Length: 360
Image (cartoon, rainbow, N blue to C red; front, side):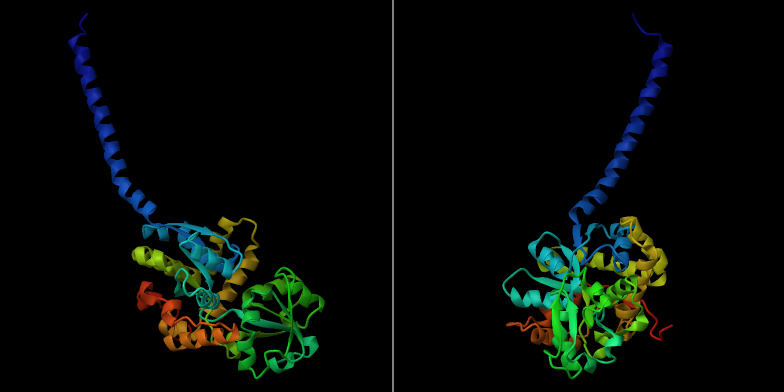
């Protein structure tokens, strides 16, 4: 039995409309494929040096606000357990990029001259955050007063490893103090209890840990290494040399996105800390905001960063720092500055002028 003409004329337009919508949807989906493929092609696994704390804010912001995505990157950010671990994981190929102490990188390159190449590509901490924290009630007011005293630190601590540099800069013999190598969770507790005379640690970490344990800043003599003649750089963004050579635009894009987020973090640390809380809802927001501000004030906002922009290195200072690390760590070989740091991936200098040169 044939269908009436009226029903045929009704059904034909409906089929045409559905087909048009289907085709439109397919075209839209196809337009999205290049962006998805590009993200898949430029995945970066990024290893932090430590837990999700205040100083990790610009990395987490760049991911959550889409700054990495704007550069065509899909970035996975993982917490860490120290600079050495971050460097080793990048060297092993488990991560393409990471965040770690440039001095630990010098040591790694010296001890693995034929190993995988790893380079610093963006200096975040223009000075090492290492500092001595000493009890004033032990009569310690200056480096000279440390003579004969007991200092505690983990074996991997930068202050412990680079003690020879600090000692030489302040007319102390390297063996003028007695060291206790301790677990990092015990370091501040030992000083608070009076079991040791001093400790070394990152300025913005140990200070807050000591205050949390009931020891005020007024009870301490604090000697930040950069303020006491130690010209070492601190933490840097590092990259696998092979990955960077194969994906130079990805590394450049990562640094552009981070630089953008760092600028936002400097402008509004309180807002930036929300990205840390989004990643770890258990953080103490007030403490981590203060930690972030201390990090920015002590090792990011420096005269050199104001004059020349963040992220880069001074060639003469870098060469001096490498030699100082080699002497202090008793390295058998010394990597060249070009092996340690590659400035070719940095954003333009004008984009890295995140601070006012006048200090305003």
